[in-house]
Length: 327
Image 1 (cartoon, one colour):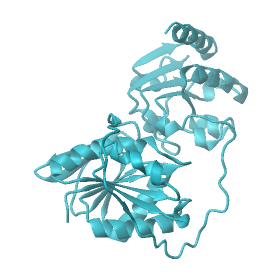
Image 2: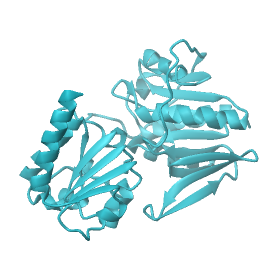
Image 3: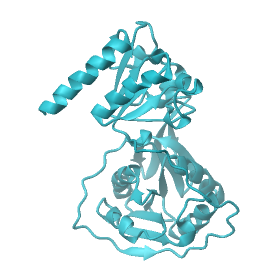
């Protein structure tokens, strides 16, 4: 068993997801403290050039599983290939993004390998040669520190927790082609469904503007979308807004939606139910707008305005337009 750290770099629509670079930065530190190397693996089809930048962000060696059967994510195919590679490399730690794909893949890999798994992790430390992993529990009400008991250990990493390292474009790393045997894939991707238009992915967004029940009707989400457009932010929604049919579930922030950690989270007309707080309370800065001064959202907010969002949000939008125009 080695002291290496293996990062599984997720590729979506021909590009490496940001969380992969964040994991490379943190993985570099962990590998150095363990006395091992930082390895990276990418799966897909025609991804040679896409995977090359992994070396620029710290990978000592890059493994590429390039095959038509890997073009679209399938749980069985990816599990079969990665389980074989991990069995050969015997790393100390395997890191995957806490994305929809990562959360589906990681438990399957852990079960196949008989490995431990910590999900939605927010911190790593090495003490006396052992890993200590920090993760939120009980919907974010408490924090657990997990100690590895056997290797390899696996972890999914929350986006926007760790900084992306500065790339060194002169840095190179050997690349090894992984033999692909996807095995018996019982479920295959027939068609990929995409939303019309382009919008910032919630889990990777640096700024999120979310709306809740206080918007009163779906048409009023135009206020949220305009502010988000000015800030280059993603649009989110509370469970109440989603349940009412105002926004698709893909917009939902919360325990049963998406867990986000942006630099700035702006909550408009969101009371702050426990379910919602579990999905956004780790945001670096929280700004809340609500007419109820006793709304729970103000207990976690760094800044807040007690007022009518229909008056406050348009003013904010105009002021941000002026500030950004002068910048």
